[in-house]
Length: 115
Image (cartoon, rainbow, N blue to C red):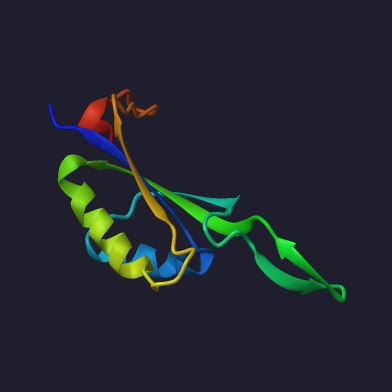
């Protein structure tokens, strides 16, 4: 049985359209996108708000979740790395996990057929 993976990409919001276009060129169109907040090594940034300087601890990010067959995972990761890398802190992370099963609610299909 072929494995099913969840690829989770957390990155800057302004990179979403570029990533979507790059993935679509490889035939990958299904994804879930969420607005999230987070901080990593950059530890927030300093901004001026109403005349006072303050540190923003949590920065806006987006989380893209893609459920894919094992054969597509390497493509997704390579596209994401190439598209999202600016060389600066805060480019994001790619998280990979194996799923036991996927069930399509409308048809009841399971596994690879449900993707």
